[in-house]
Image (tube, rainbow, N blue to C red; front, side, top):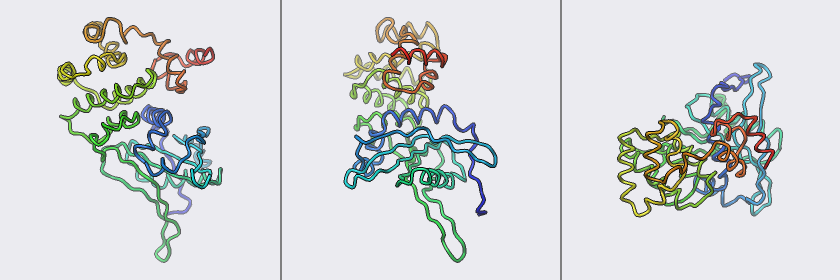
Length: 308
């Protein structure tokens, strides 16, 4: 490998996918570590958590830039040592990803001079999973760099439905399940959402993430509704305002009326974009994310933020 190799990533890969993962993990950072990296969670003092400003690194040769997704400063409980936790979601298999992880590690260490825990979250279907980058000569190994990984497709969704963990609930949609299990996955997801009793804004974030990656066709939706109606907590599931809001908006009045029969007239469908945005902003979700979800102009969202 040429020592002058420059690690690059196509800027187009920073898409809505990256933004969704970033918002989810930032919002439920402690819960994410608790359910997927318990050893890191156990060692971390979460009262010391400090999200660092988004790191943007520039390739001085090509002029491209890359924004790191999640960089957080914290302390270890026992040693009171300040560390940095870097989490990088990856939605596609890329040959140079391991090198890129080392590149980011080097740049972060050069800037902060603190111990770093690098974590990669793989969400692609490919079975590929690597957690190290090496630099070798026939006569000597110069470097062996390792990072922690979470390959969601290799996780069995049934292992997490009793966790009542918001990060796990959203990420059920990216775990390993058969096509004929989709309806059951959604039912268990909504059961988790009901039991967690979190704010509507956080519900909206979790539900929006889930619906992005697991959608039911009309036939599956009918089966889902029939099964939900037979459940003891059907009324609580159908009371979730956001459960059918997007479907009602997208498919028009016909589905909106049907939703009204199930969850009460006007619930969810009549919630204005402005009120939704305000609730999300009060939960400290980013202006960019709120604008994407509500489809409001970003300047309008900024105005709402300033009024809070």
